Structures are given as C-alpha cells and as structure tokens.
Amino acid sequence: MLQEGLKAPQLGVFNFRSFLNLGMILTESEKAKALRSVILDIVIDTLNQKIGGSTKYINQRDEDFLVAIMREPIYRKEFTNALNLYLDMGNYKYSMYTDKIYEAIFHENSKEYKQILQLEEKENPRDTMYSEVLKLIASFEIGIADEMKKKFELLQRKLTPKELDELIVEFSNNRFWIPQIEDVRTKMACRDYGFRNIIHERLKPYINSLNTEDYNRFLGEKSKTLIERVMEDEQLLDVFKRLKDR
Image: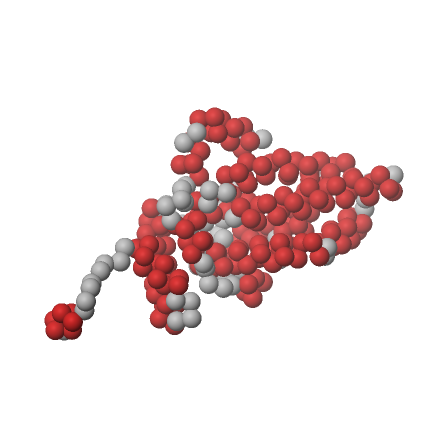
C-alpha cells in the first residue's frame, strides 16, 4: 500500500465543497450518485443538529425567500379582497379557494401539505415554501383576482362558486402557466425529497437529482437563516415586523 502511494505523482486533500462538486460533475456515475447521497446525509444530519432536529424551514435559507415572503401579504390581500367583493359565498370561501390554487399548482391542499411536512396546527404552510412556489402562488392570486373583477363587471353581479371554479380551471389551463407550473413542481419535489427526506406522492414523477445550485443556495456560503438576514438590516427588520403583524 505504501509503495502504491509512493507512485502517485501528487496527492491532495479535498475540502467539503470540492468533494461535493466532484460528485455533482460525475452525473452519469453510479459511484457519484452514491457519493452525493452520503454527502447529503451528512449535511442534513449536521443541519438537523444546528436547527433543532428539523429541516422544515430550510427553504428560508435561500436569499430570495425574504423578498418573496415580504411581498406575499400584499398579493394575498388582493385575492382575499376579490373573494369578498366578487364571490357570493360564506366566509369559508377564503380557505377553500386558497386550497384550489394550491391544488392547481402542486396537487395538494393546505391540510395535505401540512400533514406531509408534519406542521403544527398554528404553523403557516407558506413559511415553509420555496421562494419560487410563493411567487407562483402570488401570480395566481392576483391573476385570478383580476379575472374575477372582469367577470363581475360583465355579469353585473357576484360570481357563484361554480362560476369561479370554472374560471380557475380555465385560468390554470392557460398555456402560459405550463412551464412555470412544471418548474415549481420539479423544484418542490426534488428539494423536499433531497433536503427534507419527504415525498409528495402526487409529485413523484418530478423527482430528480438536486443540482449544484440548489446545494449552494440552501447549504452553501450564501445560505443564511431568515433571522440572520433580517437582523443584518434594522430598517428591513422593522418592515418585516409590520408585514408579519398584518
């Protein structure tokens, strides 16, 4: 063994990032897949220890999450206002039609999503969603709000639940949304499987290997907890508090 080592022209030691990058480069190798799996297990175990045994909020380590979650209440308000003004239905319409948007985008309602991620009753599902998912939900909410207003003005009355159901189906089937929905489903399926060891049964066909960019976004040097990002900027902290208190 010593003689074999002496034959080597140069020896080096890989740091963790180099080790990970090597595994990601060898995409067609079965050994590389095994290497990535072992590395990810180590990373998740370490991360679990640091954040109290749960990766449910690993989505918040992405630098884009803060912007998405700060804007979310604004778009959400437009949608709930539209439901109030243009839909002839009781107060349970707010949760019901939130679920219909979730189902259109990632095939799960709020209750199913919370069960899969093992969230407590008081935990907000959107606090655990990736920034791309939040942005697409926001796009759906304000888009449907606009369509409801147009329909209301055309009919000169509030919409019935059946009419809104048909509007949402038509809106969701617009070819404009196809690549965006496919992208979000893929990101949710892959990241939750890779980082949270969670499988969304209805998104199984979208599961694929995590890429280097995702590792860097959620586990690399650019990743930070939400509180770390907010605490870096006092003005941002004040804005964030006001938004979250709404």
